[in-house]
Image 1: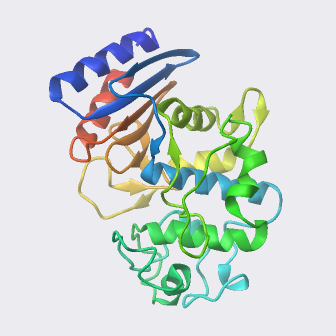
Image 2: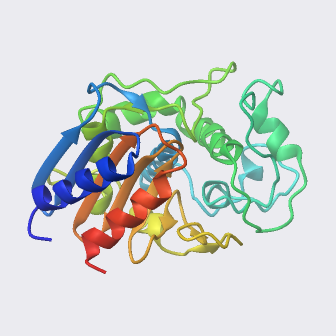
Length: 284
């Protein structure tokens, strides 16, 4: 791919040919940037892309010596399985079954307590927003309010000083969702991750936590392309790419030196667009 504009044009052509409900597109190839919009440029819910921010929060706290991702959380909160760690919660491998529902945050007086009180099937993969939410509750016991902790360490450096993370009735950040960003703001997260934790020459988080977003893959048991392996917030694929993938088509696709960020409202069409982006960006 010769430039961000070339890649952008191909993606725009594909989106318009398929009718995918894209709102905004941001393409970066190396230092080259190109953008396109179909709708007004406003902040929109990023859904599960927020899980990457939760991972970054845990990584920053680990860098500061406040937590270990591999220390059992039983020393911080009560859990049915005393061996569960922050890494297990963030990689969806606690083995606890608590599926998503629209009323998940209000179905129990304390979702984190409900989640941790349930039996575990061992280190089996079980995707659930409750897992990331619980991880942020555990982390808050060591760092205080997650949003305020991240404000000077992540949000302000990225120019997101006024971002607000949605909260449950208990006042905790949702963790696995609830962050609204413009397409270009979401792309800043992508650039930080592509550059392995460095932003404009300053390291915000260690390389290890960023690399763990797309390494140490866990087998999910899924047969679907792009859903067979999961790491810390990252999905392996399509193809040789990897991605952060939020509901309704919120995508940050990493393909070599290219980072393609899409905001959308089209849940059904997102996988095909992600596959096209990965194939086009990598040339295979």
